Amino acid sequence: MDDEPPNHPEFISLINEYYQNLLGYQLEQTSLQQIPESKWEKFSTQRGLNPNSSGIYLPRNQTAVIQDGNQLSLFHEYFGHGLYCEQSLLGRKLIDLEKKLLEEEKIKFSNKQFTLDDLDNFRLQNDIFNELDNFRKQNLIQYELFATWTEYLLCKEFNFKNKFEKKYDLFCKEDKEVVDSVVNFSESYGNLAMFYKLGLARRTTPERVKKLLEDIYGEKLQEVKFILLYGSKKPFSDIDVFMIGENPQESHSDWLDVKMQSPRNLKKGIENFDVRTLIPLMNGEFIFGDEKYFEQAKEQVLSQEITNESIKHNLKWSARMQRLRNENLNDDFLKNKFEKYSQTYLANALALKKGKKLFNKEDLILYSQSEVDIIERRNRKNAT
Amino acid sequence: MQLENLMGYQPRVQGIQTTYFVARDLENLSASALYNGDKDYGKFIDESIRFDDHEPYGEHLNYEVKLNLTGEKSGRQLGLTNVHIPFGSPDVKSGS
Image (spheres, each protein chain N blue to C red):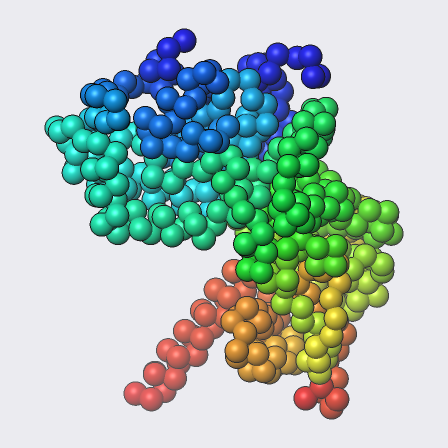
């Protein structure tokens, strides 16, 4: 691969294809401009850019400008910063702020010539520029870590490992430590986990989530009965996974939420119409495991009768979640989590009491609200 | 290919130092350029994400709370945030 012409269009297409297969998207809005090495200094100084760099990414027009033929810069600026600014919230905000600032600059400098000093003076007094500048500085580590890890990833995937190693040797000790930790993470938990951890959009499909879980759990995954993908499946929400089995452990972060139940607890959860079992079970997409066992579990939910015990179970858990909420008032995450659980359990108890089997969180909340409305109307009527 | 063609615009240069631009050039004058090599990870170590073997998902993202029936907190699994509420009928006597 080292003999291939650098940064050839076919090579760029090959990398885009790799991204498409792994992540479900590729670069779409980012442009690439390559400048001959001999003209780099003139190019950068004229535009007030740092001439000592071998590449620059310009968020305003989503353009990676690199020295002709510099492969690591292609990986860093074009695929690294380019993809991050297209597919992460931090990247998108940088571009949005740049575009807002551009509109103000166009008004200021319409129909007149200006120098870089004029532009700098205007920007220093501009609120959007100051917000942009602070935002960039606050998140610089995220942008640069992602781009540097992209260099590592693409060098590894496309057989240029020696190029990254040469660059790595020039890092200082502290930089090496940070880069090592990112590389170790991706080696331990897989590339998808690294992309998602760093905030890139999660286009979840059963196949992609299966690959993600295989990389994280390894052989332990073989011990599960079945795995489901559920939840909102929005690109910047966490990935909700429901796992039935004994061994693999639960995993919770801001991008991956794996809930685990043993087969025994699944049985209990079904019998009790427990919302923490029923919502994922009845709404989840099958990813992996014994599909017949999964279908039988669903069938049992649909066919079994509602009992007084199941209504009491949901009422008890609503009260318990409310108590946990009250014990965690200082932690917004936990407080909200327990409050929502409490509401959902209560709504489920109300629905079950009326003989209704509702398996969707939104349906349950809507149902409980309509019940509250009925009670309030009834109370008003009685009062008059 | 000429540099100016590559960039799609041609700033006018007067004298040795000063380059003059017009409004349409603004599209290319990004205010938040990211440079390859413009990093100093060392200075971020204390305040940013660490990806250590023991804390692969970044400590600041971990809530690291494992709740049993009495709401007691315990350890982590996989270094991920762990908010686990066990199943089974609640034991009202011991849990409340």
